[in-house]
Length: 110
Image 1: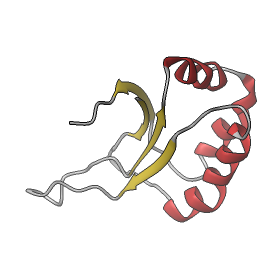
Image 2: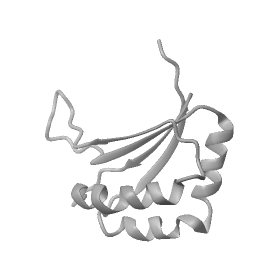
Image 3: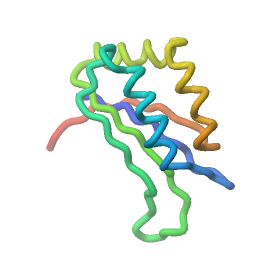
Image 4: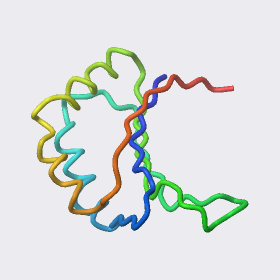
């Protein structure tokens, strides 16, 4: 299995409107990907803090997408680089001032 993570990087003066993200951006993302991608699961982590220092800034939100095959990952990559996601890109500034970092990893159950 493969996991793609979209991590909103913490910064000074960080703003993130989680209510808007779930109400507007997530449905827009689901609409954009419907019928185009084989996403095994989609999860959102929010409001992460260090267990040892709750005052340290951490990513306000991380989207995790799981895929069964590299072909599915490649389909996502093609969509991410296309103009078909322009509306999603334009929407980001409406809920955050954080930069977005996309990463890919392989996942193995242990």
